[in-house]
Length: 219
Image 1 (cartoon, rainbow, N blue to C red):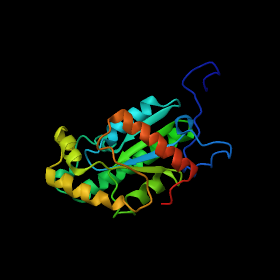
Image 2 (cartoon, rainbow, N blue to C red):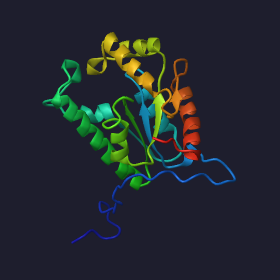
Image 3 (tube, rainbow, N blue to C red):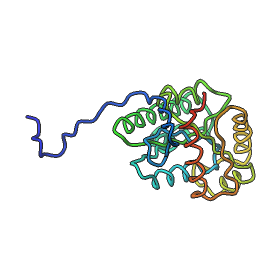
Image 4 (cartoon, rainbow, N blue to C red):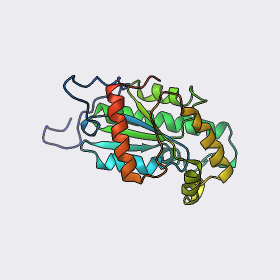
C-alpha cells in the first residue's frame, strides 16, 4: 500500500532528459546566470583550480546548485581502481568513461528537478569524440562549457600543493597544459585566472555565463 499524502518518503521525481539549449533572454534585458537553472562544464588542466572554483560557485548561487566532480566520481571505485598515473590502459580509459557517463546521468536528474549543475573535467580539444562531444551526449546541447586556463607556472605551483593520486609530475602537468592551449581559437569562453583568487574567478565565471546565455557558444 503506497504511503499517504502526509507521509514522507514517496516524492515523485521527474525523470532526467537531455538539457536543451537555453532560451534567449528577453529583449528588455540580459539573462541573470545567478538566478537561472544552468548546466555548466568547467574545463581546465590539473591545477587550474576547477574544483575549488566550481565548489565555491555552486555554494554562492541564489538557486539550488550541485557540484559534480569527475575525479570524485571516478574515485568511487575502491577495489580495482585504475590510476592512469600507473599507466594509461583499457581499465583506466573505461573507468574514466564510466565516471563521465555517471556524472552526466546525475546532472540530467538534478536539472530535471530544478537543481543547477556545474561539472569539472580536464577535457582535451584534440579528443572531441570522447571529450566535449561526450559531455554533450551525456548531458545535452544546453551544457555551457567554459575553459579555465591559467599560466603554466601557476598551474605547476598549484599542482605542487596537491596530494595523493591527484598530484601529477611536472612533466605531465606541462604536457596537459600544452594540449589545453588548443582551446584558444575554439570559440569557447576562456578565463585566465592566473592572478585571481577563487571568489574573483567565480565572479568572472558569472559574467562569462551571462554572455553564453545571451549567445550560446557553437560547439
